[in-house]
Length: 59
Image 1 (cartoon, rainbow, N blue to C red):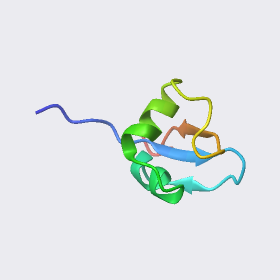
Image 2: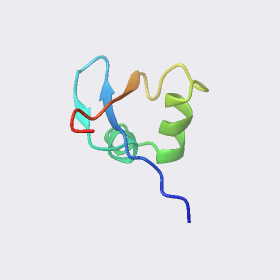
Image 3: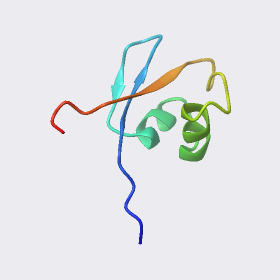
Image 4: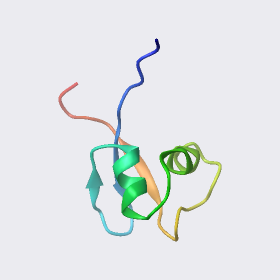
């Protein structure tokens, strides 16, 4: 089974940082797959907000 890397996600408008794409998606009442599609460039925004992946500092 392939193990996926978990990225932290930041909301650009509010500067809030989430531990995962799923947590960020939950904050705007959307699913993880919609968030992943947004992060991969398929949607320009998600529920009117823009998110970006951020690198973990302890790697």
